[in-house]
Image (cartoon, rainbow, N blue to C red):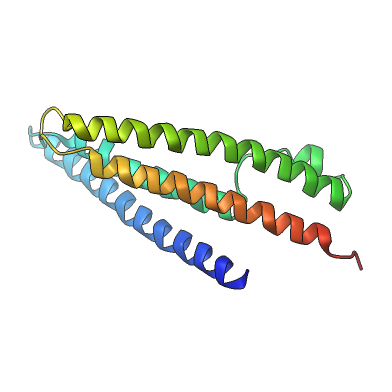
Length: 163
């Protein structure tokens, strides 16, 4: 279990770093475009590039949010509950979240394969969108793995005797 935990946390940390690099790229691109507009110019395809780059940021940010349990939760309801009901409720929410993200991942895989067969690309720059779709799928699968990890972590915590 320790190896699995290290692998998941290490992967999420690396993907978070990748997402941060892409976020900086988005910020630089927008800043450069704003400065360029001051001098009556515009970067062609800037909106398309931002749309492509932000997918990487979002896909990996959700994983980081899930691993650190910073997602929107019902803390006001659960904070006064005893440990066992709280963990059981959290696992119920995790199972719902797992089904939700798994269905989105499966549908995204199907859609990506369909769009890849058609050669999907951006309108202005003709950049393929398929690599960002694949990165989004990787992020979705990682979210599912993190949720499974959190479920097992909660069951492990439930098995501990309270001191």
